[in-house]
Length: 340
Image (tube, rainbow, N blue to C red; front, side, top):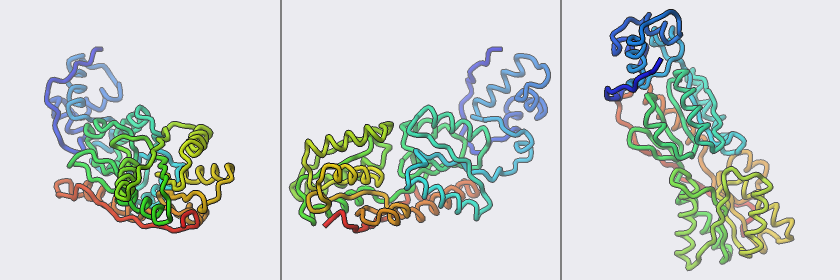
């Protein structure tokens, strides 16, 4: 059977149910249910009307019983770039705790910087009719979120005025890192940054670092670290950049890269902070407890998680209520022994 593309305009309402599909197609709830579940025979015209209605409403079938009752699933989808990153792991832990206190449970999706994987997870989460979605991924697939009939909030990435964004002040964080390195006497500055595109918060961190450096008459070198690079390849890039640039001050836009930098400096017999100062970024509890010697810019992870949850639940419970477009938190600096 050929499914015809709907010529009707898409409409913009959240939380369509099976009843909405039935009304739009002009058939009964039972007919919609049986067509979706492929039970019984129906004319091509009837099936085409139902699929056209589903497409126009962007309806994803899930549990028919739940759709009929109109009840909440009490499930929230959370899309992360990489759950092995200490920042993401702590953020997820705190999001889950905040949601559990409010009787919600979490479905976790690990996109691993793969746009197609993220699209597949978005489709899966919508078909399971989660009540809302928190995204902390940085793939450039903004259109996939614009097409969702779901309440969505975002960490760091701006999608548009209808999706609240929660972030820390990444630009100021980059400035803070540069200021501390320069205060310790660093003049040859090197940045190990994540990929440079608009949806990645490391762009603001790098820009803040550049602005503070240039204000002091310095021009840092930026080494981009590919998101899909293996650990060994990242180590090779770090060793090569340090050898070529001979820096005396380094910022990494995440703490895991900063730890690789420290490892490289040890193998190269370059004492820290005497010859080279190092600053990381994120300041998760794991890093602060396990590697307290690392100077790093600290994000308020608990505040970020709490605000992400509160903003999303407001969109779920009060969809007509106007919300802030952006919630931004200040960062702090943890001074370890890798800076002077």
